[in-house]
Length: 122
Image (cartoon, rainbow, N blue to C red; front, side, top):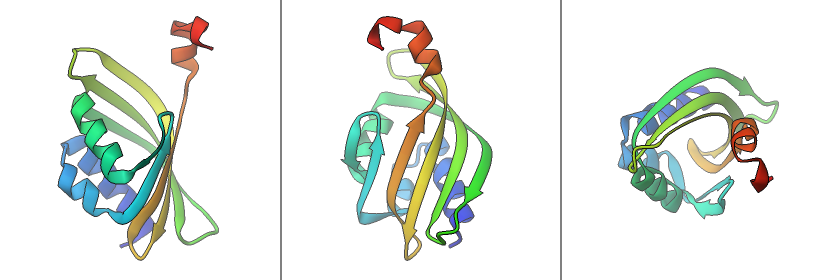
């Protein structure tokens, strides 16, 4: 599967709420690095689906690296939390693949909206 196909499928399955299909896109030992630190892909996905009842994904662009195993996607997530809060933010997700499986997913968030809403945290 191509890098673009893998990244698009991941975003589609996140939006569809399909935990098992998302999990199958990752290698057994895959990790996700984000604001919460480093987690196994399985734990990240479990937490992601526990916290969100609906997810809207808007893909802005896909970027390809000179490294054939790496690509990045620039997207917007709109997360509808179980407690009724809706959180909307932009992020970049960097996917590192090996043998058609995601080995590492690094998520970089645009924190500007959070910093302006909660300046004392920063």
